[in-house]
Image (cartoon, rainbow, N blue to C red; front, side):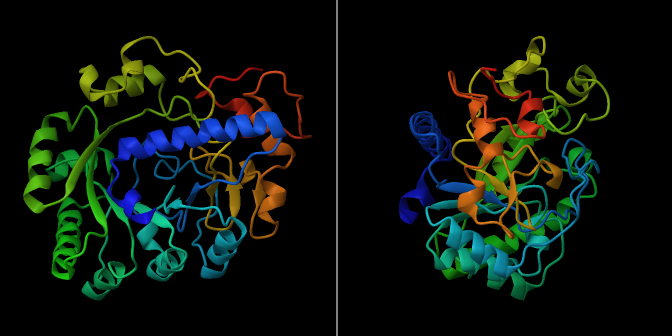
Length: 343
């Protein structure tokens, strides 16, 4: 399984996750309980060194207390969710700012779980750190690098240092080449926006030159966020950030904004979840505040959280003919503008 995941294209991995979602959806519809997840998000740090303007954390709007995950909590999570095959070890912060990151990665790899990290790499670390980092068994690292010049790069990656990012990236590549290993796969991830769109091909060539895989993603302006309203109107943010070319942006930004943004069921509430550095169980990757959690795995058994009243009600929002398991307080999923609910 590990070997197969390592070399699968990311688009195929996404399709496999979607297949599992449909299985989980029908399992819940028939039995009233969701199967344990096979892939989840765990955030080892919600502290970040950048101030990306359309990020819950970088914008300064996230209310969750800044924190770092401890080894004991990670072990508890892995013990209580034995079905895990993949962990995205990042969410709202910079994972590598957790000083115990290498120890945490080793704990995951001891269980033969595929693990990936996203990082901005815009920080100083010793050569010893990078050597130890590549000994953890990490499977993939995606580096957020949205420009080839400092002025363009920092338009979105505010407070980022392009020179530092590229130096760290080259160090990782050199150590990997010296070890003659396939892991980790290294991706230069270029998020296309109006400012950097003309540097796309140059970035692609640079990635090829230094020996990393290159992939693109398109920027979103946060119009579906269930927690926050970013500064300005949706139209103003579209005007500022979205390229005119439909090939370099999401199709929905070239027509009138319509809600929900996706005419389909939520593909997270049935088959995956996110866990904060302190153990708060969040229903999806769009949610960041502790107050919107569905439980706390540091204090409660996971089997009591995963099919509790909040989870059942959230899932019933997407299942026809299901009895509402409405909890006493409202849940964040009721405010979500991303997915199409049946009630």
